[in-house]
Length: 189
Image (cartoon, rainbow, N blue to C red; front, side):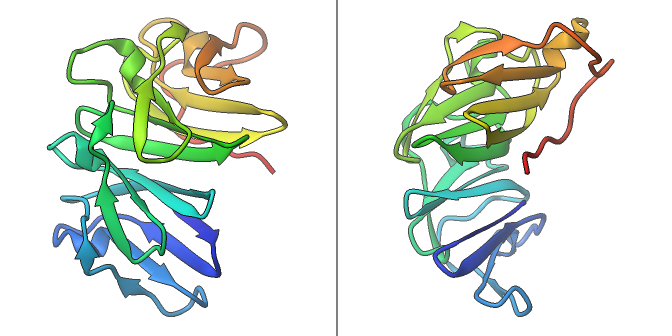
């Protein structure tokens, strides 16, 4: 994942050394690994910018490390309040004064933990109304006054694509085509 804000790009990826999983650049050409604050244990999957803050999601078996935030794109802090993913956060988007993140459920096994939202990027709430993925949510995007998320929802093909106007209550698509297994990416432009 990669996002731009505050005259800086932030990119996340795979680096078992930890800090290499988050990098930043002011010109998009030359990149620097983060070296202060928190980092993922292996994979960074998604990053979004909004409200003068970057939020990134990735791999951290401690739970709260699966969502991190930064005001400068250089030094990162693990979330420590509200909900968190059980292992991987896989996608995050910002829009309409709110972040929405999708990933690998909650430690309590509740399906609603696959989609979470936050108004500050620091404290997260798992969705609790409407539809949710039965297994991982992979990506989410915001545009035209709605979020669209893709992921896996067991045997119900339409559950692989969902939408929400508030980021809290989700509806499965029910017309047109859908994926037979999982949706892995979504974008608006």
